[in-house]
Image 1: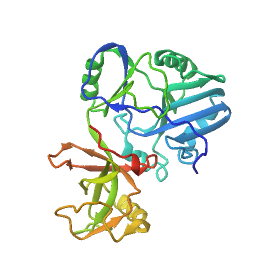
Image 2: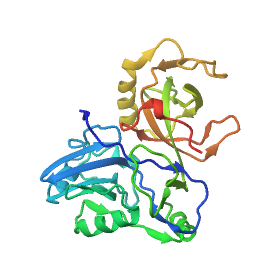
Image 3: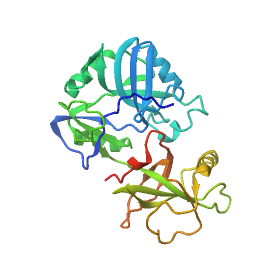
Image 4: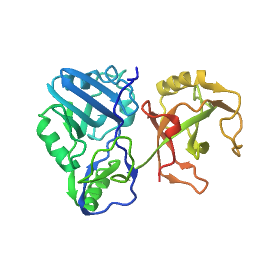
Length: 307
């Protein structure tokens, strides 16, 4: 289900290299689903960045929010943690099939409190209120930060092999759907959302399909971004193959011919994948891509190449 009325979250730009500044604070970049939670006593709305109802997807988080017994609107990330206590987008994909996977809601911003809209307050003030509001809870967690020392913080992130950090202006107001540079993504690992444009036939012992054809949008048109054939287990191959069947089309969704591609089954560009890779090649394809999972919270038309 998709809510007809929902709050669109503030967005972050790609931010290049780590830096130090007394005017900025720095948080760990979480690898999960962005989620807004509207809590009024024991009534809760929990949804994705595009308004999809998350209450049935993550019932333990939903019930934990009910127990807060507060009146507030939160912004955060729903995540699963691996054995190293790192967020894992791949594990998050299997939550519905494996009840042993623990899910958490890390909250990093507060939009309303006790009926008052506080989005115009500086971020650092909103976070102070948020930290006091969130009591110790196993599944609802405050997303902490450090101030000023972004370079040293990023060194720790690299040492622990985390995804990266989010840099935020300490005095920034909360502006829904804005990507104005007040929030910046500084990545250690390269990840890219990509539209699935087709798939190849399986070879050898592989079942269902061989690789996915990836694309991003550029000036309103699909642009080829490489193929991904790793990161799948048998269950993922089967489920993704089933999702692609109703989307099969005869003609390529690309406006230009892609050199070197033959025997492709094309699909409507509707599904969005999360891909980890090492670097962009000279012809703007992802090198050594690994499939992490599908993004149910992203419209394909929003997918552009991240710098």
